[in-house]
Image (cartoon, rainbow, N blue to C red):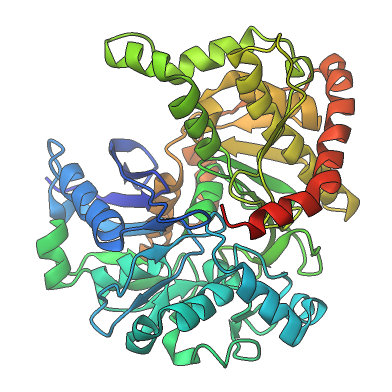
Length: 511
């Protein structure tokens, strides 16, 4: 007897995840695949689109279809999300012409950002797009390809992100959702909800960009070629999908004004839904949300899980060896060491600008820093300071949202970092804001399944996610520890201002 199931697949920075759900949000099966993030040189971050984006989707789909009692005909809708905004030039047959250039962690286009700002004016671009150019912006990276890889540039039929690439492979239709398009600065005009060539005509034609739809609309159906590679049935509906952060926010029921998602992934990413499109600020991003007549403010720090991974790989090799020999998880042991260290890490402060920084400083030339070391400090102090450093950065954002009249009334936290209780508590203590952690933390793939359900009409609306999720766990701030952290947050902010010029000089040395 057949059943109605929804497939959600998300391609992340270091891992891809897939989930099968019923139309009521019950999880039937889930799986994940780890993959590599490529760093060809300092400041660059790439994925192999064939191996990682398309390959992971196909492998996840096939693996989930081996679930007992599940057949391809049971899948009534497919939803996709992926990291972004990224840049991939493809030919007319949807073949990649180079590696995918990732989002704000890739800082290769610094000169192109400066060039476009000098040509058009930073204020002009901001007023036209609700965003300033940053390492997150798509336009400068396309310009970088034109200047540095002219043969690739000439062959490009489209410039797409990872989600568009996968959906095109599935349906033969090149589409993107408004939320993702809004992140492709300065190509998207949020006031007309259309592409604009006003600030990009010298390096792209508008017909090289995808058709824009909403996240919960249908892109098309599985083609015969895609069926052979994924195991999905020909004709299965596929929704337009979105960037992973949007699907992640939806997965924890961020749909209404005043609700903020805090994503603890490879980077920190924040999305707050607002009730009007006038909420904007140069040190943040803004644009349409997932559905018609919605707007959001966005923020993102360049490192998070990528920084804790770097720390583990370089400073906890003994714990990694013990884990490989059957011992405790290396991350868990580091968290225990951090938890045994006093709040404030006894004066150690980390600037987590190890891949430059996105919001609020918008500085791809920024450098990471470990400050305040003495001979009394241990690995536990350093790891705690890494976690707290990201907490100080989050506080900067909460203060900024508050200053422009958009303080979140609810922060809903999601992602792998929510398993780290020391980190969660430190963030709430430093920022002074409670966090809600939903019981179902499958992440963006869960939001993808919901979008597929809405697109096919099998789920009434996105608000059904509130029924799918149960009551959250609440992390409340400790007022006493807030007093400990306050002066450290002040020093954290001052450190960047005091060393910015030296950071930029070091960047020019091109190490």
